[in-house]
Length: 410
Image 1: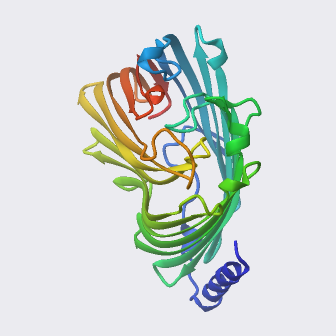
Image 2: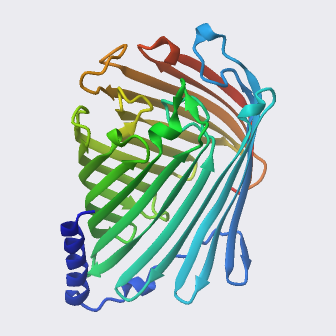
Image 3: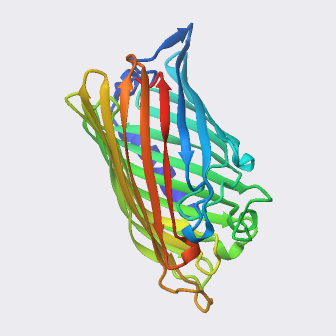
């Protein structure tokens, strides 16, 4: 973050604190547990869930090309999760503990325990609100659509935000985040060491002017700057500036989630790597109609880092839609469709197989479920993933099918 930007953000916050009228809205905002929370132990609120998923067959465990005779295996995943809230006066400490215990019958080296922890302290005062937070993840899940190996890595995020109430429906928010990605020393894909290529630290700062259209809907104009610094391959270092707008819906609203659209100026330090100037987007929305139909929409457009230094990044564009429909009584059906495009960008003078590489990933699936009780569901699911690429070794088709049991999600 530049000294000029730091000075500007401090000036905005101080101006609003000094000049805004006395407002007591922040003291009335509920930042604690939802009404549906299941357990209370004194000042501690707990909302535990547990699920047993992917109890079935994965016919392409390693996302191998058809010509490579893909390996099939029996799998299952056990996922306990607990959200918690602790009240301290008018403030709340909130977080969650999440673990995936992944089992493969034959592919012993693919078994893993993926852990995630998060903690945030929500401090609402008279007209200014603070929210320091930290998140830690240790996982062997695939990092994205490009890298097919389940590479062990840790991710650490910490930062905070300050929101200042301005007039009756407006506020200014300033946020800073530091994100660290560390691959294990032995993590490799196609004989390339991911530890050496992709270990990095990203820092970002965002200033937003927010307008609370309704108690459940917030509009904002956002300006952010970020810096990515790679630990071992400094040719990948970059700066980025994004100007955008977003809409956020409260969890109590009919539509839930956030949608952000902006213009991104991505500038690599390496002069032989072209930059990117264009649209960026991040959408995660859900909608429930008449209590029986639920629609989830997710979309993404933006820069994603590649393991290959000759094509150091790609522009990912795509999204998915899922639908859940209550049929009659305790029975429901689900459907899923997704499409993603990876448009690779080339370093000047680099030798590569295809200089106009664009991969496509398609996801289709569905299932049927039976609600054993309000909080328990038994389901059967099937999903097929397909990737098309000019590089034949990166093309694959994978089919997964099996049962799932969820308790505590309702």
